Length: 85
Image 1 (tube, rainbow, N blue to C red):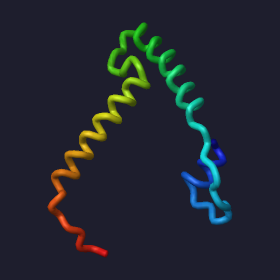
Image 2 (image 1 turned 90 degrees about the horizontal axis):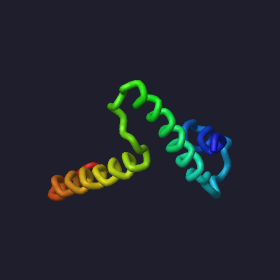
Image 3 (image 1 turned 135 degrees about the vertical axis):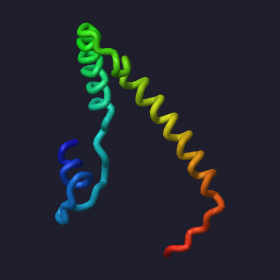
Image 4 (image 1 turned 135 degrees about the horizontal axis):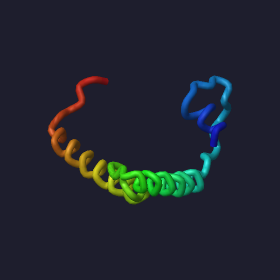
C-alpha cells in the first residue's frame, strides 16, 4: 500500500513504471474502524461526545449525502454549455 502511495498517488515518480494492479484497501479500512471504535469508547469515558459512534456508518452517510449534493449540482448546471476547450 505504501509503495502504491509513494509511486502512484502522492508523488510524481517519473520512473514508476506501469500500474497493473491496485492495493486492497479493505484490511486498512477495517482496522481503521476497529481502532476508531477503541478511541471513541475512551473519549466517551471522558465525556467527549462530538465524534460519531461508528466510523463505517458515518462514511456511508457521508457518501450518500455527497451523491445527493452532486446530483443537485449537476441539475443546477445542466443548462450550461462548455465553452472552453
